[in-house]
Amino acid sequence: MPLQMDTLALPRWCNSCVVFCVIILCVWLQISASETRIFTAGQWDGTGEENEYYYASNRNIIHDNPKYLVLASNIVRPGQVYRVCVSILETGSPVVVRASLHRDGEQVVSATEIVDPHQVTTLLMQVSNNPYS
Image 1 (tube, rainbow, N blue to C red):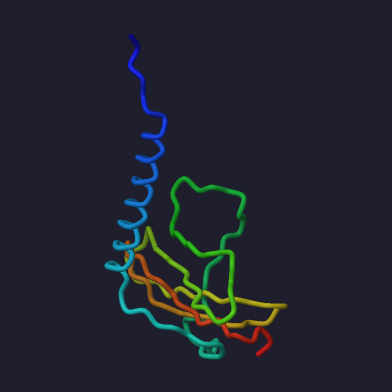
Image 2 (image 1 turned 120 degrees about the vertical axis):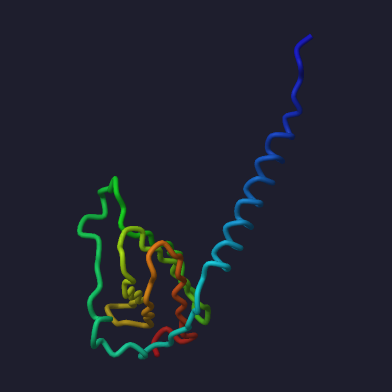
């Protein structure tokens, strides 16, 4: 007689595994995060080394040897803190990372952080309640 498998056992196990992985990832990000700062609009003056930032020249190419990892939501809500997680994968020295949100060509808020290699850093930006301020 063939062994019957409970069809609900696999999805429950998968759900538990996903929840466990998310919890571990959140704890790891919280532990590895160094000092975090919340920036409001207008705190970046655009001078100095913060003005030098890098960008991907072609977004359709997947590189075999990535240099950095950026993780951010594509949804921005007024009055909320917008988070951008950054990890520099291949460099010997810290790198200045700048993130900014723009609306209609105008900068709404930005954050600048010095990121150490092989560490996950979270840039926090307070989004205004009034999108036109």
